[in-house]
Length: 358
Image (tube, rainbow, N blue to C red; front, top):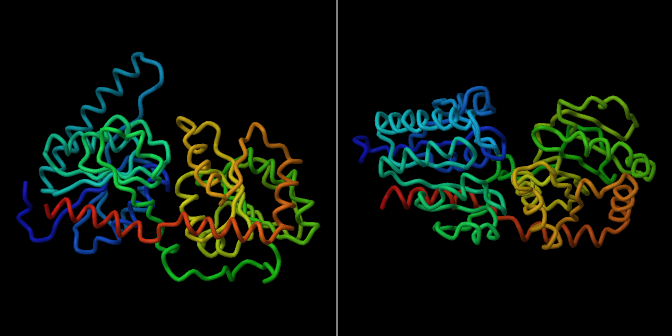
């Protein structure tokens, strides 16, 4: 179906977490000639990030439970209704293509576009593709992958390795943080738990931190907003914050990062060339964070530790060793840089243009 307007129209289906939303927003910014509208879910992060940028449509959709039951039938019915809603939106809006970044919202978006005969670009940011990606990739025109290691899991799909687009602040000329009272020459450890924080990692860090601080390091600890023990540790060189806006500057200034292994965080670490200790979230779907972290560990850019095996003593020792090994840290930083795909957003935007123009 062609658009009567000379301005091409794109529907972006991205919902839930920064890992789904930030790559989609970064790609949209590279398509200034497109009229873009957004498909999301009520009460998710997109309702905060998107409406100031693009028209937002929402539909109720959720994932299937692991066990079959009455709830499965209910969710199936809602999915069919969601597909019909998206099909109606695509038809009324005369959209020419769909971009989705996976997750629950991708299923009705891909199915509806398939019914309409519209091209679909699915971006998969994880090394182990999610369930929706694995199930519906063959229905997509192309699957853009963040990790080359994802391709073997998608044998029926056309895949293109583009990397994962990062937020615009990571694409601008990076500048060191200026609003935190950290001495210029002090080693800086940054702890990142992801968009939801990471209580278990927070506890490990607080039980390990005193040795690092007494040795002269500073620690910026992004705790998230659901940590009940956030006030249990204090030190003049320890800064506990629920969130921090200038993540590009903070990660660039960091000597070492302790982090979960979500694809978005790893992409940002690569963009800032920051060495890391990675502790995958053990309850992530299909343990996909371990697959992500293994790519970085195998490249020599990070150290990988499973949460169940990591004690405060081990963490304290590993961080102390790295802080006293500037050559090792520099090697890790160099290998981080080699993993970065700085023009990922442009590559993904060009894929969309190619499909629409063809």
